Image (cartoon, rainbow, N blue to C red; front, top):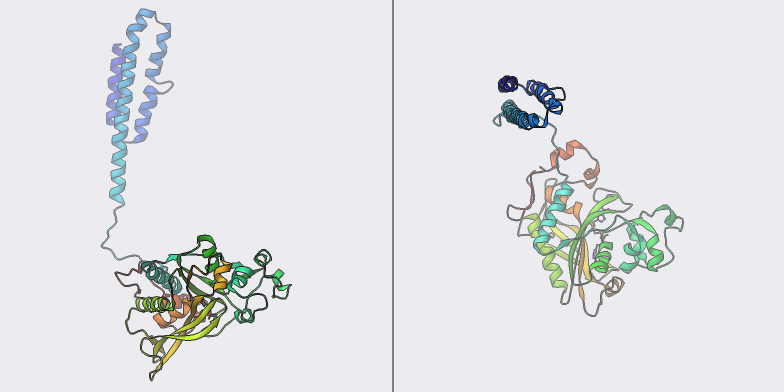
Amino acid sequence: MTELTAQKQTTLDQIGAATTLDALEEQRVAALGKKGWVSLALKTLGSMSPDERKEVAPAIQAVRGEVAAAIDAKKGELESAALEAQLASETIDLTLPAPDMAKGSVHPVSQVMDELAEIFADLGFAVATGPEIEDDWHNFTALNMDESHPARAMHDTFYFPDAAADGGNPASSSEAVGQKRMLLRTHTSPVQIRSMKEQGAPIRIIAPGRVYRSDSDATHTPMFHQVEGLVIDRDIHLGHLKWTLETFFKAFFEREDITLRLRPSYFPFTEPSVEFDVGYANEGDRRVVGGHGDAPGHDWMELGGSGMVNRRVLEFAGVDPDEYQGFAFGLGIDRIAMLKYGMNDLRAFFDGDPRWLSHYGFSPYDQPTLSAGVGARP
Ligand code: FA5
């Protein structure tokens, strides 16, 4: 026992003196490991008489407990010292200039989508989505454009190959057949149908997203972005549409002198239909929104189409047109981005040129909020 007590004291001293976790582990193996002196002492119990064992066993177990506790305590001490040392060596001097690293920026279209979602959310609109690879029924038929409707031709549709084999001019208007004929959606209006079928009425949504048409010049690109708006309720009229568009444009362009021009138009899915333009001034090669488009040095830019939802469309979408009515609009997102941020050519939006992006892109930290102003400062 005296030998055990002496050995214990030596081990406790060595544990106390250990300065690294490795040195501590050596002490643990030498004492408590399979061939360690505590383990060997425990093995001697087998050859003792029961009385002797009764006396010696608790003493060895006590030594074992003491050594194990000392190792644990020292381990905790060494680990927190190592952590302290690491924290001290890794401190950052926040007063140093930031390293010159490549920075990403937000594309103007994404920025504008965030801005308009923020404004419409404030007007009580939810955001809805639909597929870009759409079927013929949702893109055309349910929007009151059956297979022989001339308005289909205006959309310059990209059909998928099996539809092209039909001459790109589907021969059936039934939902089951029409749903199989696939195309790239030519507008966001099919989301009207999908949302009304899913949610019924009343409904108040916007649906921003990509659309595709075989079209290209300075103000037309084969892929562009639209935002659809749809409000269906019991007493909705054209005045609500005008107020909504005006309120949106004032908030979006952050000025009160917005002049909106509504022109009678035709869309198969709205009746009556109106196209809306916004007045802008030509200042050098920059277009600045505001003022009357007919004033000297001013002009109009067509931004979208709209109207009261045709009752045939409500029927296709499963909404009772005798109970509900409402308005819809479709707005070119790229066009409003051009007007707000002074870009001249729509095609540059999709060139992926980093110089253009670093000139027109936005900081990821520039989150649009109504309180701080939706417009980002490039
Ligand atoms: C439509 O697409 C209708 N779905 C809009 C609508 C919705 C009317 C709901 C009524 C009710 P339109 O083809 O005119 O309409 O396109 C709407 C807007 O999208 C245009 O005013 C324009 O701003 C934008 N646009 C159209 N074609 C292009 C293009 N190739 N490139 C960029 N923007 C385009």
